[in-house]
Image (cartoon, rainbow, N blue to C red):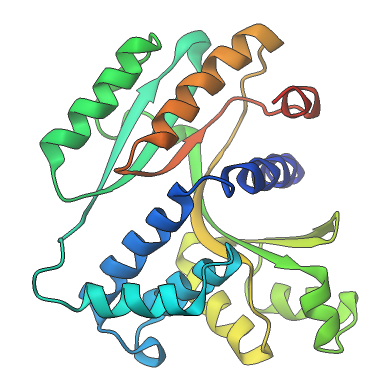
Length: 251
């Protein structure tokens, strides 16, 4: 899975750039809203809310903002968000998987279609592209967090592998841990028991194989992906285009 690890490392770097956008807080607030409506406003008894709060901290959302989001989500007049996914092909055979949280399905699908049409993409039927991706739990943990717990790297890696990690690596000061989708919750619990807080933890759609494009073609795809990520109703955009170091350096 080393290719996956490289892909995720570069995706994390891109995420660091995306984090400069104000939209990142909006995404986290929606996750908190859904978590509260699904399981209540007490993090101790609501794993999804604990995860949303951890991810909010990972993007440096102030504690007061997090608490306000939790309180607002509990209001009976708060918006009800629905999870919906769309699958598409961009130019050059690049597969695109789009995850949304929306309170207006008609608005969302109209926006997605508009962006795809503008960038010569095509919406596909549900399930058409699922075979191109593996859905994995991905945990990103700063190396310093593990060191602060007094744990040696080998001991930490052994612990998470015993807990079900399919792969665990340390690259550029960050541990990236992969689990099968069904082991996501148990890995969350294991890290909580160890007192290790992930900077980010989520289910990602990892491409089984990637499409390598020349720089000009890749930048056209990135423009479409950026347009999709800028849309308010869209939470995550996954794709199977290879994000090379050269391409990232040009961004």
